[in-house]
Length: 243
Image 1 (cartoon, rainbow, N blue to C red):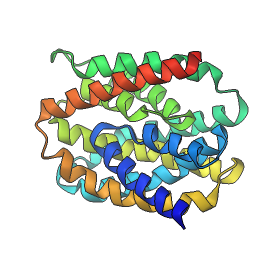
Image 2 (cartoon, rainbow, N blue to C red; image 1 turned 30 degrees about the vertical axis):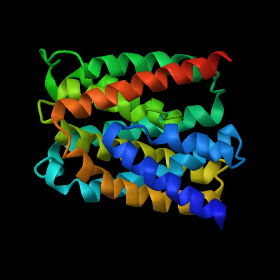
Image 3 (tube, rainbow, N blue to C red; image 1 turned 135 degrees about the horizontal axis):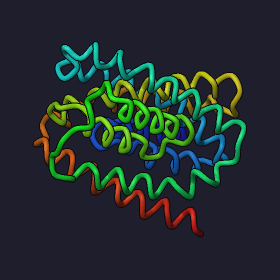
């Protein structure tokens, strides 16, 4: 019972963190390791549970998502395809390479979040934007720690919208990548189902609460907070990968 309550609490906190600064897995993944799951089992269990963050975030972000159905549809299928590709890679290849390059990807994405506004590379229809989104979605499906930071950086670069609205789109299309990856893991991965239920419930609650917090933060504060957290995570993952 204590383990179930503990995972529920972890899920709530991680769900809020996911929707506000895109770092759910940095909380939930180590927590699953602490509860005795192997790294692979913790990764796939976390991904399955994260589906409910997307559901909660979509429900809590209805004001920011108003009028964005077309954007979600245009970008969502790319994210879903990338998530499926990442899940397949995780199931058939070792994860060492991604562990080594992930800190650099996260650090670069975090720095992109705080760059001065500039010319956007063709909007959400450009080939470059689609390729970048697909690559990030692969990472989300493969491992996903701070994948939301990468997704937010790409969307910030290509969507000329308020940060809270960009964050809402990020929550939905990241959720699509997680959903497709989770479906594959549920069929072929070592998912620990007893841990999914409480963690997923917490993610659902936290994902629903998070947008109300995000919309109260000034736009620049949201970007700077996400960037600072991302850089901290990059350092932590880099140290872990080299030790």
